[in-house]
Length: 351
Image (cartoon, rainbow, N blue to C red; front, side, top):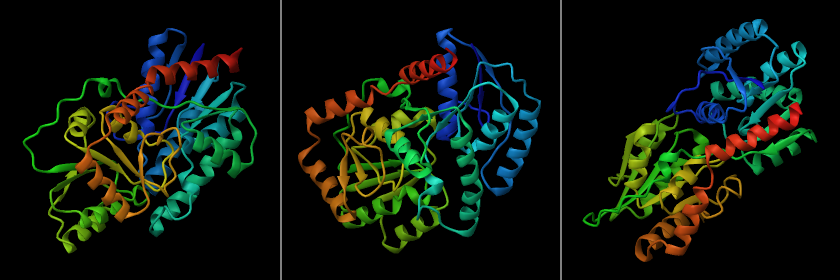
């Protein structure tokens, strides 16, 4: 089987971008199987703003126009490269598979600022192209599959194939230090508006004494978060910067609890990473996170409730039976399983 994977940036380990990491990990696992004659075809282009998006798309269009159709499967690993599915479906008879990670661009209230909204309007058209022009759709989660089918009223072939967590998270967690007087609450992720990190700061403002809130990430909301911290004199809150992939296990192991208060997640990988390290995870109850991902999470209704949950975990500990269940469940999400399920999709389409 000849396979071409197509993404908008060159996949690399530790890229910091979830979709790029997905492409890299899936590619790496499929290569191990010897079940496909893998051909990796993509341009070197960076897309992180409006001008970057236009530039990347022009480069990709040029590459795809020259691309051979001599493949058994064309797998577009990013739904925001929808123009590729539209172009390739017209040029080639080869089946096109697209992975849809989320439809956040269509969610109301998640975008702030004129530039972000303009960017989203452009990308929404590409996502729609991907959904309508692909022969088969792969979804990261049940939530994404249900939302796509409802939003676009489609009944076409599709399947949920959950992504995995890196094998480095499967090692035995280090014993927590007992000499610290601080209970450390952590966050790892971006500072995009929909990540809702402000909710964690509001909870920290309620229970500051005896806690350390170590927040890893960067993004457009950084200034607003810093201003809130300074205004409320939150000495317990520290912004730690970007969390490098090679240090994530160490960083998770420095936490006593993990908070991921996102308003919307196509998948929510940090939830499983934290649980795989044996941490209690608190999410925002009103946020959209797929049920299979937040199965063993504590759900906070607001900042006051979140503060109460954190206090309770500190005072009474994390129930050992629940910890074992959550850890085992999180570790069942592997890249090997993701690759095996993806290969089943390829086989069904080709055969």
